[in-house]
Image 1 (tube, rainbow, N blue to C red):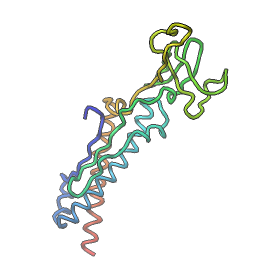
Image 2: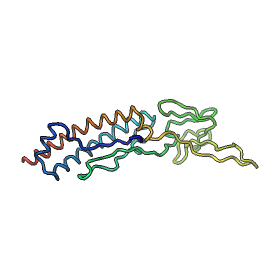
Image 3: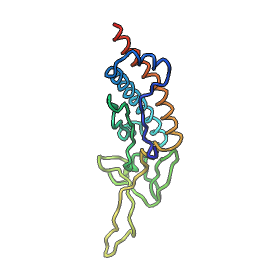
Image 4: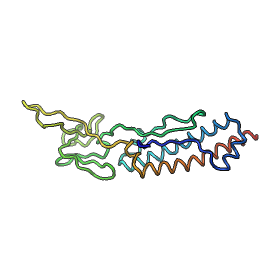
Length: 200
């Protein structure tokens, strides 16, 4: 998908899976496949968090906040989708530091200079300290002075989006490949469990 979302759909193409499926009634079969799809989605979600964090240059904990499974598979759909947030991540998350002439931040693996930007929050001469809503990076919109001694408006600076990182070829290919691998393993595991219970 263009937004980097990962679709995981129940797959039963192997001979071994087909053999076990023939032993199960529809309700039990769908429950087993639903479990396999959702297990796979959780595993791929973790993989995506790690890949996105590395690609976007953000902490893994921050990536976790913006990657989610929605919807999860049900016996009716047998499909789960992993999505990435399209919201802009504040620039302060990207190891932002105030330097002479602006702010630097590491994004997409490179340190980028943001001329004339500044950080707000923390004591004077220690603006790099993040304090609650402080520590954000700002830039002026338009002129520095609006006239009559008034400063021009400021806006909070943002970095990249998790959905952008998930849509990158290297990330999406790695996620999709891992999804296929995990789904094959999990489908066989859940079908095996279901047929064993039936036999018992």
